[in-house]
Image 1: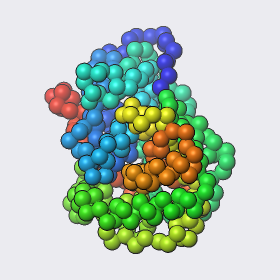
Image 2: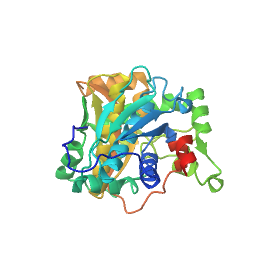
Image 3: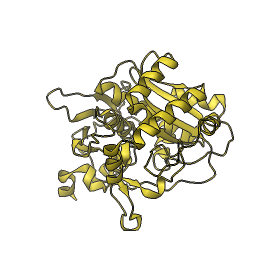
Image 4: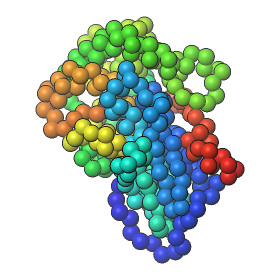
Amino acid sequence: MRKTATAVGRRPGEWTLAEAEVLGRSVLRAPSVHNTQPWRIELADGAVLLRERADVALPQHDPHRRDLAMSCGTALANLELAVRVLGRSAEVTVLPDPADPAVVARVDTAELLPPTDQELQRYGAIMVRRSHRGAFTGLPVTAEQTARVVRAAVAPGAEATRLDGMERLARFFEHAARALQDDEAYQSELALWTIRDEAAHRNGAGIRFSALPPGELPWAGLVRRATVLPDLRVLRERLEAETVLLFTTVGDARIDHIHAGYALERCWLEGVTLGLAGAVLTQPLRVPEVRSALCEDYRLAGFPQALLRLGRSTRVAPASLRRGVAEVLGEKWRERQ
């Protein structure tokens, strides 16, 4: 989210249909809570607005809308990269208009500016990034790779830290899983966003039922009524075989949640460029006592927002369903087609 240098050349004007398609598809590939894809983009002359969709909020899982804002933050990271690979500068302003809080961010593209090699690599990772909800191979992520991923978390007030002490984290996961498994309202909401007739859904939103196999905690992340919870020893052993990053923010307001999602997606895409697989966990942090205990036990200086599992995999996870490009770009874009 840096100010960009001035480039020599014409001023970028109205977006072409091809450019709009690039922006829309890049945003659609961002990770989101329950794969709700809670965003739209609005194209202006020399700028793009990222808007939040409050109609797909999750009041049981996400009553404070932290995950909703973080999801928009991941979309912002993809949007910025898409603008850059189109050869434009990208000056990002988060929550630019107090009178219109649905606008999550504005990306101004005042100048022509070629993308860097790193930006091109991360943009290439957008379409191949997947949520790996299974065990990793066991081959370690090197310290150098972890450091590169952590350094990618460039966002105001947000940072990524590798967690140690997996026995403590296993206890937190177990407590959160039991609390969510017994929460009838949470389970009903999860069922609503779970797609069981997968063959009939070629696009849209929601979580594939096959992506939530029972007995996979913490690999699958989400806990259903039928999930068989492993004991603490098994949980600890699973976690010790992985690299787990914790994303924290200095504050706990909406802007901090957006920055956390932005930092998370940048880290995840950097991991993909290094050949790593990953998956995000936020469910344990949405149980208040778990979030508080995590802060105390790990002596965190900020607020925990998300966990990112990293490892190696020999298989490619299936892609999640996505909405159509026309839906994310809106009516004005459809009228131009």
